[in-house]
Length: 306
Image (cartoon, rainbow, N blue to C red; front, side, top):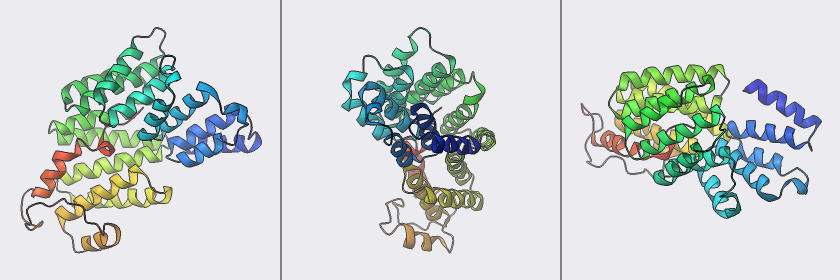
């Protein structure tokens, strides 16, 4: 991905007004979480390129790649003319954003309708099937979610996505070691493809798993590495998620340096510990039990997109 982005940027410098070149460069930027840059590149195109349903559809796909769920849904609602003629990849972006925003029924309905279309290519069919799994995940139907994730695993380029999502479903069923195995394999595939933002997301999920296993040092190493990378990209949902996981870790682990993190990064001290008990006591404290109860509803921790 890094090499592809470098080549796309070079092509953009040579042909900054060629829509296909700019579109590819913008998609690669969005896939790395650099949505502001991606949209800025598109808006440099001639004004004639920035009109109609094709323009709105391109922005929806772009925001979908960057996991800007609110942005996707806002654009979809503001362009009703798209609803009856949207291409499958646009429907996928909207359905996935809906699933990750707690609108599971709407997501499943959109994905199911698109899956009924004739002539769908295999990657798009896998993406939409992945959304069906995510909709079930959002309803805490983890066995059903795992079933759809397995059906989505027909293409090599989706293997990392499938493994990550299956890991989430397995973890919710208490299969922590199986979850760890799938996440480690998914991370290896993401890194091989140069997908650094996606790999960072898996780092956070791995840290969450190490927290369940009381391997606090390993969890901290992953979260601090992820936080350093995400901070350089600017404010994002990914960074918020990472900060939250780090706060849960320090509240449960209570290392001597944990207070420094709260003083510098979390002055508002979000409510996590409810009992007032010592976080160093043996066993699982109430703050970790709360963390486990709410994390399945946390959009930042949910399944991944293709």
